[in-house]
Amino acid sequence: MSVGMVQATSVRKNSGSWWTAVDKDLHWLRQEKGFSMMELSVSLPLFAVLLLSLTVIFGWGIKSYFFMVSDWALQRDVQFSMKRICNDVMFADRVECDSGRITIYGKTSDNKTTRVNYELTRENFPRIRRNSQPLTGESSLGTIEMEEMDFDAVGEAGLYIHIKGRNRATGHEYELRTVEYMMNNTRGGI
Image 1 (cartoon, rainbow, N blue to C red):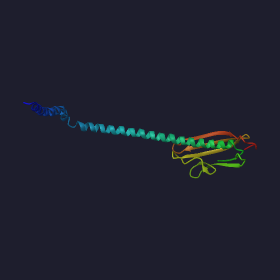
Image 2: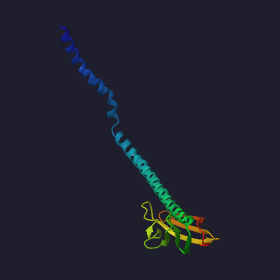
Image 3: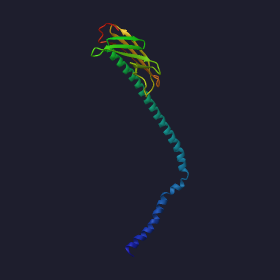
Image 4: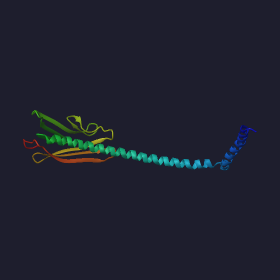
């Protein structure tokens, strides 16, 4: 017999034995009929509970992030308003204040008189306006309301300023109080 014939004969013999070996290895699967369905019926509800709990935790995280950013917007609005008012008061010549409204008079570098008005309006929702332009409000992060804006004279050249805001989404309040003194007050008094 030639070498080629020996190889062909051995392949035919081994081809049947290979499948037999695999069939013997998978024989245990035939003995466990129904166990796969039982495993699925136990594992799928456990997977659903795990997925639901992860979704709830993710939702809480998003909600707390939104509340944190919304409170940050409240603090930013109150601080920005306070800085603008304090800056204008510091360089003012004269200040006229009323409940929820202040008018600040100053001079430009070429000695022209300027006037800046700040007021707490209650149109759609409370906000602070500077020369009838909104200084606060319209935040996409939450509804920020300015609740209080009070002024009072302190001594000859000082002005007590109080601003309070509230976040409707969280219910948190934030307020700042300060006393600002006018540097250019040569006329004496507020």
